[in-house]
Amino acid sequence: MKKIYIIDDDKDIVESLTIVLSGQGYEVKAQYNEKDAVTNVTEFAPHLIILDVMFPEDDGAGFEMAREFHQHDSTREIPILMLSAVNAKGDYAGTFSNKDRDDSWLPVKEFVEKPINPRILIEKVKELI
Amino acid sequence: MEKNVIALVGAGNGGKAILSDLLKIPGAEIRYVCDPDEKAPGIQLAQEHGITCCSDSCYRSLIQDPEIDLIFEVTGDDTVFEKLVEIKTPRCSLIGSSGTKIIFHLLEAQEQIRQQLVEYKMDLEDKIIERTEDLERANQELGHKMDEYATLNEKLQEVNNQKTRYLLQATHQLKAPFAAIQSYTDIILEGYAGEITDRTREIMSKVKVRCGLLANSIKEMLELANLKSCVRENLKMEKEGLKGILKKVLAKTNILAVNRNIKVLLEDFEGDDQVYGNRQQLEIFFSVLIENAINYSHDDSNIEMAITRPRNVLTVAIKDYGIGIAPHNVGRIFEEYFRSNEAAKQHTNGNGLGLAIVKEIANIHSFNIEVHSNLGEGTTFFITLGHSVGETNKDKNV
View 1 (cartoon, rainbow over the protein chains, first blue to last red):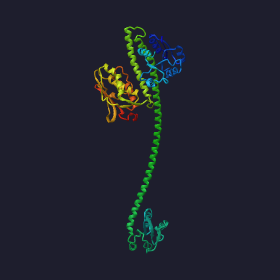
View 2 (view 1 turned 135 degrees about the horizontal axis):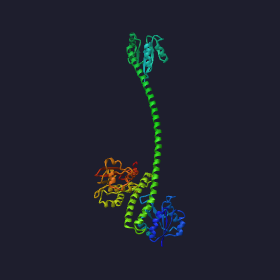
View 3 (view 1 turned 180 degrees about the vertical axis):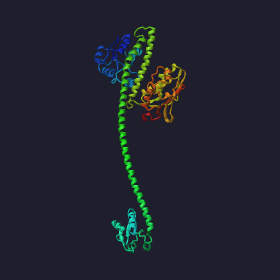
View 4 (view 1 turned 180 degrees about the horizontal axis):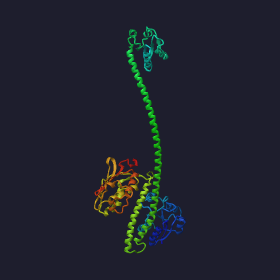
């Protein structure tokens, strides 16, 4: 069974993701803040990380965590799917454009915008694992 | 300047008076004053000014000096005048008592005028000083007022920025729980949370539609707040192909038009006109204008779009044959949340923010928008984007 680790402070979004992904046969585990993310991910050893951008303590904590995962041997190879509450027209649109998706700056494979559309989510997860 | 050499014959009171006036003339050199009376008042005055005085009745000094240009005879004695006629050189002019009297009066009048002029000049100078002081005071007061206005303006700007920040925070906070509601709705509707009845599906579909409308309002509130806090200098501005932007927007809005059998006709879509601006904002700008043209058109009608370059100025015209705008509302359509009764009836899902967003983007880019509309006949938006070749709106003032 393939494993997915979700990091998002919004418990409702985590629950939505869990309902959809569990229904597709994935083993899902989540944490609701940015603490000890590398240790927790290393321990769970998921096939995919789903990561939110904005956290209450820090607007761009998701980006920092993605860079941290990229720096550690135990997490570097795990693909990251990023969640964003802003759509393609919003604040982070430029961040996700192809020219900015540089592994050293933003090691993210894909992004899914909120609200989560179940079919798009499943499509993107299947592309990555 | 070469001076006229003058001799005065007769130094009584009349002679003294004319001597006083002659002494004031810069071009006159009074060389001789003659009178048999060595104590005559004119003689004393002449001596005070170092003028040669002579008392002999033969006027030897005058005969011996060929440089004398003019003799004033002020004695009133005809024999003296005749004597002077005899002895003067041909080049020397002689003015008798009556002529001298006239000249004296002229000189007196001139002196009076001069004094009046001096008084007038002094009065004028006083007035200039007074007005200058008034102006300086007014200027200082104006400076104080300007400082006060600048401070007030800064405070207003800060309040406005604060309001925009609160609005941004509030809309961001609204967006997150709303995204969760929409996610749950999709999960239920698409059966990921188990089987649902047709009635539940019907109700959840309505929830989804209303969520979509509200999400759109939140998105537009957020866009407007972002635009209001936008600093042009921090914005990524580049030359963008106008045709590419319009085609992308038209592809996105096409479904709205197709659903109501509205045809968007493109005129003069050749060429590769460039517009200087922020790509994301340019797409929002034209999306709102084209969506509005569709939303306020009648079913089965046409929308005409044209790119023109009158006097080398790039202009886009978007013309619909829809409900139009009443004359008294044309000036209000760019106000936030303004919706005319006709607009609210025609397009129930609007929120009155679209054209406020358009206005903000136009301000940031120095675009000019003109609206021509007739109620019941349709509306045309003329958007001036800047010069079509080389120079663009980059060089225009906001």
